[in-house]
Length: 122
Length: 123
Image (cartoon, rainbow over all chains, first blue to last red):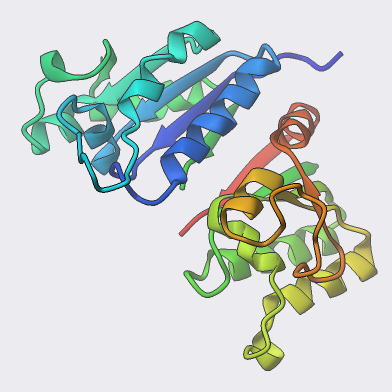
């Protein structure tokens, strides 16, 4: 039996960049399926993923938001977003597709360091 | 030390795959263990044999690394299928360079749990 390890997935890419976001969720759910603690952090352009208004009907592109809203059912422990990344893009924490823990930029390194493994996405 | 390597970028997209290759060579030369090199996202394109690249063909260098060190180079099957590298039933691996094999995210998680470090190389 392996010792449990906590994972954090760091999402920095905007929505609709090919199939990368769905692949990120696949990887994240694989970790959760192994009963390992998983968190997700959105920063830089990754915070656009949390915006509710992403609907491109007819473009054949699948938004990530519906997938993100299912994370709690897979025991994903915490979803966090960097406050400054949201503010720089004029995104309000109230308008996101799911409740997130807000982290100041100065808190991010320490929060990531609290995990055993950090996975860069994309 | 045991390093699991995850490569997310294709050889022609960025420097990341070549950097990973150089890191692995240096780590092996210094006595470290690489139980798994996992190719995900566009990184699966590292397994594609190129008829144009000549001496710069990274897939050939990966294959040589497998011959010399017995590395386990695993492509995520779903990522490889999305990019047309293997057939949808996962059986036709004819486009892959020698030494690469098809696997899944479960192998990646398992290796991460046994390793000391995970290093991701992305564009």
